[in-house]
Image (tube, rainbow, N blue to C red; front, side, top):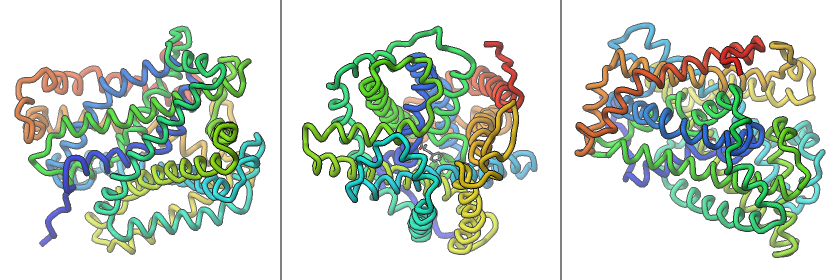
Length: 474
Ligand code: PHE
């Protein structure tokens, strides 16, 4: 007999834990970088449309699948499809995806850890110089940090996630939110910051192209932790009396608000530090933008709160961002862990050790991709560009497979599980769902334009990323 499945202690607990998974590097680093490189306001607009009209229905469908089957993604797909091989394989893709995304996520979390330690030890000036990021990520310290972060993730996952995560998220998420708000107010008071705010908020539709649309969609999927089985897994811990529509919408809103605020902090800061910035130059932005910019924002704070104060603020900030990254990382790796435990009958500790060995090797290979070892730095060439091992993981799993997994959710729910079953599940705990406009929107959109959009973007991403050819023609 299996023990009864764990449950979240309250809806707030669920929302905060799921938001803890959703809010992470994607919101605080990925979103502002993508907004900078994909045209500011035009990107924001497309992103918001995707979140509320395309991603939210997928998010609710994933939660419903999880709660209905009380199972991990492979279990959920095979239970509902009565063990059809094709759908089981789809479930397995949803185990491999988070595992591979966990690899690149770990690399960035390790960088953040280094920034935390360096601000704690008073090295903001060093961090603020443009070359430090490159030299730090190629230094031997990175491997020490990797071991420490790896050990933390291992310990958290080994001692059962639900309660620990739920409790930590209740304190950390609201603190991060308040701290971000204070920093936004500070940044907006700087010279020329308003030009950055305008770039971020006012859409310039001439910037819109297929690349911007691809970026907005991958970013929205990643940020909401969609297409990776996380929501199926978290949904399996929900009570039948919980209202999935309400809880799901709150998660999407919280996640989007944090990303929005992070954008409102970073883009104005870019314009403050570089008033002559040419918005076309920004299209080359990468994560290093954030890693160089943040220490500079904190150093600027010195004039107001002194050297010591600036270091305290920087340390607390990096600590919160690091926690946001760890809560996400843990939730990503919990998916393959839960799969090995549920489906392969492996003990939690053994499952973790197995994943640590394979994942550890991949993380090391990724960390060597930034110049340390040519084999990994120039790992492959496609579409006329040389790609590192790290780039390949991002291109394949983040940009390509995520939307594909979303497409499979739509097809599965619409044509295998069927809408009336989805509706039945969503009606539980929500008396007003039956006959509502949302119910109609869900069944219409999930079986029509959402899969079409996801399919188009998937094909276009493959053509563009791997063959340098734009199907959408712009
Ligand atoms: N959504 C998280 C972020 O934005 C990352 C994540 C992806 C977490 C997938 C869990 C699953 O950083």
